[in-house]
Amino acid sequence: MIAFYRTLLCLYPAEYRKRFGEEMLAVLFQEHEENAKRRWRNRIRLVLRETAGLLKGAFHEHFRMITEIQEELSFVTGRFAMRNGFRFPKSTIFFMAIILGGVLTAIKKGEDIATSVPHDIGPIAPIHIQPVHSILLGGMPLFFAFFYAAGLIGWAILFALRRSGVHRLDSMSLTQK
Amino acid sequence: METLPLTEPVVLILLSLAGQAQHGYAILKDVEAMSNGRVVLSTGTLYGALRRLLEDDWIERFEEEESPRGRQAYRLTPQGRRNLQLEIQRMKHITRLASLRVTRQES
Image 1 (cartoon, chains in turn cyan, green):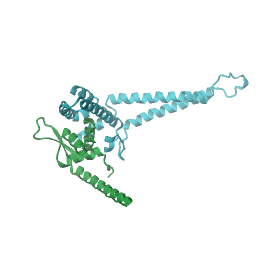
Image 2: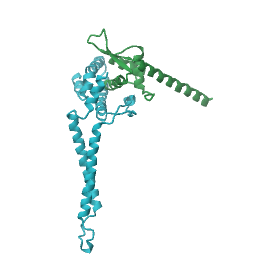
Image 3: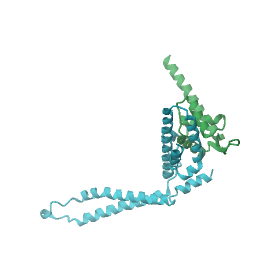
Image 4: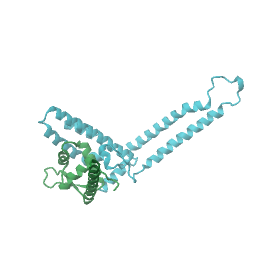
C-alpha cells in the first residue's frame, strides 16, 4: 500500500515532494499500521480517503504552480479566493500576444475573403456563393481553436523547459523560508 | 484580517498546535478527536494546509530533538497565535450575538 501512495506522491510537484514527501509517507505508514487490526471496511475507507486526498492535493499544488494564484486558507474546504497581491505570470503576456496575433490574422483573412468576392455580380451570380459573414463565422472558431492550442503547446514547452518562471518563483519562495 | 474567518479544519489544526508542538500524524489524530470524528483530514489535505500556514508564517517547522529519525514537527508562531486569538474572538462575538438574538426571539 505504501508503494501505491509513493506512486501517488509522484504526482506532486518535485519541490513539494522534496519538502513534504517523506513526512507524508511516514504519516500514511503510521495510519496504516494503526488501521491494520481494524475491520476491512475501515481500511477501505482509509485507502479511499487518502487516495482522494493525495489526488486532490497533487492537482491543487500543480494548479497553484501553473496559475501562480496565492490561495487563501479556505482551499481546504474547496473554496478558492485570490489575494489582492496575486502574481500575474509574465508568460501570459506572451500568450496573449499570440492570441491577439491570431485574432488579427483572422480579421485580415476575413477582409481578404470579403474583397475577393465581387459585390456587383447581379443576376448571373451563381446561387451557391456563400455570404462573407457565414464564411467568417465558420472559420473564426477554427482560428481561435488553433491559436489557443498553439498557445497551450507553447506554454507547455516553456513549462517543460523550466522557462515559464513557475519553477523559479517557487524555488525563490522556498529559499526565502 | 483578510484571511479571517478561517475554515474549520484550519482552526482545528491551529488549535492542535496551540497547546504544544506536534508532528503530522499527531495533528491528524488531534483534529479528529477535537471534532468528535466529524473532521477527518486526509494526509494530502493536512499537508496542503500546513504548507499554506508555513508560507504565511502562521506556523513553523522544526526537527524534533528526541525523535528517532529527525522527525519534523510544527508549532505556532507568534503571528499564528495572534491570528488564532482573533478568530476565537470573532467566534465568541458571533456566539454571543446568536444566543442574544435567539433568546430574544424565543421570549
